[in-house]
Image 1: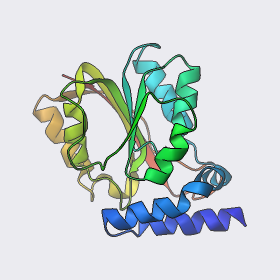
Image 2 (image 1 turned 120 degrees about the vertical axis):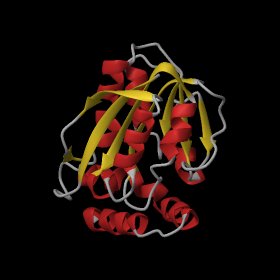
Image 3 (image 1 turned 120 degrees about the horizontal axis):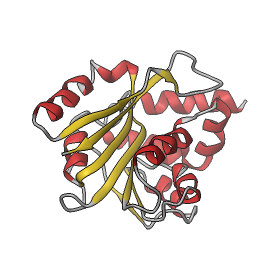
Length: 211
């Protein structure tokens, strides 16, 4: 059953204990990722476009899809009038599928938590969904993402409930605000990231303006 396969794949990515293991798990999942996450009712790649559209006028860019996976957000944003979208992901297999969607101006393989291949203030905004979660990108990655976002630009991302405090996200959000690197603009309530499965899997969307 497709939901069972999806749950098994989720287990593999959530239990990956090194970046290499995580990359391998996504490489194995890439070909069936879209259909299996759809069966779970995975909302985030499509829902994040609402927050982007709320804070970034259509036509403005470039935007960065940080942890783009198979690029599910790209076509929705393109349909909404955004045409300068870059994507990064740790999985070459996922990036290959993202490239086939004809929605991204550039795609780079990179790992969140390390140096990113763009200059200071390059992006109008970055957005990221399902990346700041169990066994995935560290909270420290936000420092580098803020570096490559221009002043007056926006940081738009989700964080999973299980890692918000234990993974250091609450602390890093506060550090960046205290250092006057960004200011809070919007924060959603906790909500389900899967419409069908995993009713206890909750995320929150955060929007900050880089200053």
